[in-house]
Image (tube, rainbow, N blue to C red; front, side, top):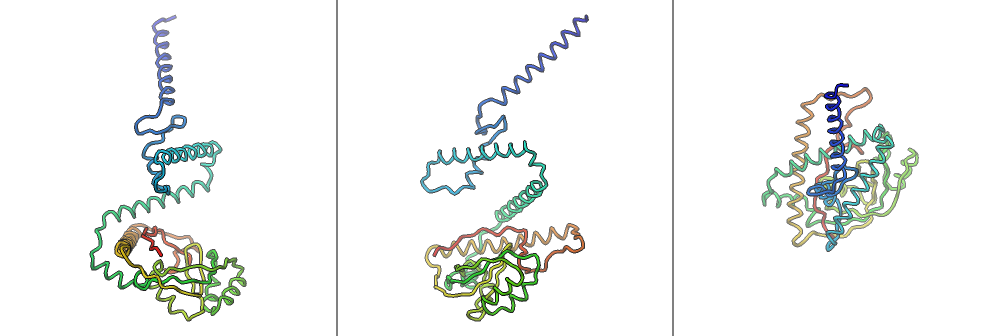
Length: 299
């Protein structure tokens, strides 16, 4: 036997064995530095933990260490269950693949909005003053309305729209929905004029007393009748910051729409026969842009 070849081969196996042992040791080493935990060697980083904490509603005065550990455990449990789902092959499920793409796209759009917002300048005092005047329903003339309201999922067919447009009472509305086989929920609700765009609020107030008005809400449609109102003007220190934030959100919305129009002009969009972009203002046809975050007035 050629002892040179044997020794060389033996050294090779020894090196592989040592390398494998090092890998095993590395997989089970204690987390340090930016790594706060591991699951079978898969790292959970401090960045992930901070992102988890940022998504939580943390009560004032809560024990920070306790909250941090609870957030970390939530990540651990989620990852363990996700690993189990992959073991069961669910990551190859068509529904998962589609939903993962939806979530990824939505997150990218949110991050784009955040980037655009970060480049914006603070609105001038004159802009804020004009906004407060043009949108008095949010400030001096703010009103809380009580409404008798029907809500239902936006139907795929639009046959019901003409019937609702002709309805003069809520009884008329229920007849239209019943005749079209549309299930709905009815109850009393509140409508804060500060949370309704000024043009829409102006249209609502033009509706004759006691007659219903329709408000599309993305995946749902609301039909309401005003049954009462209570003045709730915004006053004090909250007014100016709220108005400033509202101006920023309005400007952000315009900038994102401009970016969307510019990007759509760069690409070729084709629809299969029978599919198309809905007409502007179609009920239940929300856009892809995220709704800008804003302050909510307190009563």
